[in-house]
Length: 389
Image 1 (tube, rainbow, N blue to C red):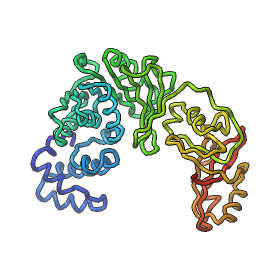
Image 2 (cartoon, rainbow, N blue to C red):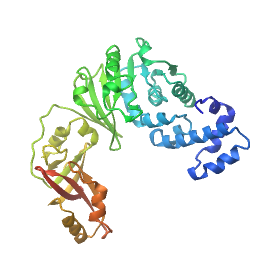
Image 3 (spheres, rainbow, N blue to C red):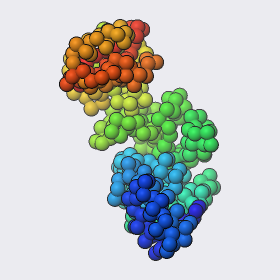
Image 4 (cartoon, rainbow, N blue to C red):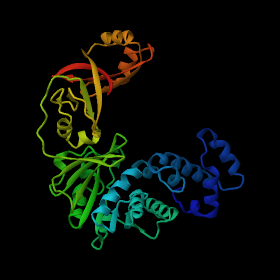
C-alpha cells in the first residue's frame, strides 16, 4: 500500500493500535486473525507501519514513534530527535521565528522546529512522504505550526521566512552518495538558497571534505552518544569559515582556534581518543592542547600525554604496555594477566578487531579487562594496552 490514507481512517487507526508491539515471530498469526474482519491489504499496511514504528523508536523515542507515520526511507534518513532539537534550539537562539524546511522527509526536523516555537513550511516533492509529514504534524498536535506542502523545493519561494533549512537526499539506488554535487538537490543549489536567506542551515554528510565547505559558512560536526551523526553548514549570524564540534547530550561545543598540527611525541602514560565529531572537524589539535599532549603518529588521531586531564571531547585511557604488533605475544600477555574481557580499538591498522579478539582471546582467561589499541607509533604497527582512566 503506497497510500497512508487508509491507515488514517478510524478502522486503520484501530488496526494500528491492535498490532502495536507485534513481534516478528507473531506477525503471521496476527495477520491471519485480523484478515477475518479487515481487508488483507490494510492489515499488511498496519503491520508494516508497526515494524517501521519499532525501528523509529531509536531515533524518536517510544512516545512519539508509536504515534507517528513512517516510510522505509523516512525511518532511515530521518534526523535523530536529539540532534534535530539541538539544531532547532540554535536557530531559535539566533532569533529565528519561521523556517522553510526544504526536503522535509517525514517531518522529523519540522517537529523539532515547531516544538521550539518556530513556524515551519515543510516541503517535499514525494506525495507519500509529504502525507507522512502532514500526518505526523497532526498526530503530535503541531499542525498549527507546520504547513506541509508537496512541491519541488527548487520552485518554492522562501523570501518571507527568517531561515532556510535544507536536508538534501544523500542516498540513491546504489546506496550512500558521497559527492555533494550528486545530492538531490545539489549542494551548490542549497548554498545559493542559503545565501538568499537571513539565516540558513544545510545538513550534509559528516564525511564532507573540508574543501567543499563554502567560505561563507560555519561548519559544525555533531555527534550523539559518541556516534557522529551529521555535519551542518550555518549561514547568517555565525562565524564564516569557522569550525566547531558539538557533542550530545549536553551540548558541549568545541570551537576551532586555528591551531597548528600537534607535535608527534613518545607514548606517555595516558592515551586520549577524541570524539568522532572532533576528528571530523579537524580539531584534534585543540584536544591535544587541552590535555598537554601530542600525537602518537603524524597520521593518527590518538593523543598521548603524561598527565591525566578530564575532557568532554576525548576519552582517556591509562596505558600499561606497548608492544610491536604480535598476536602470540598479546595472547601470552592476556593469559598471564588473567584477562576475560578484551576491547579492541583500531586506528591506522588493517586488522579487524573481531579477528584479533578471536585469535588473542579464544576463551576468557579470568576476571580482568584490557583495552588494546591497534595503531601506528612513529610509523610502526603497534599494540598499546591499557584501561579507561
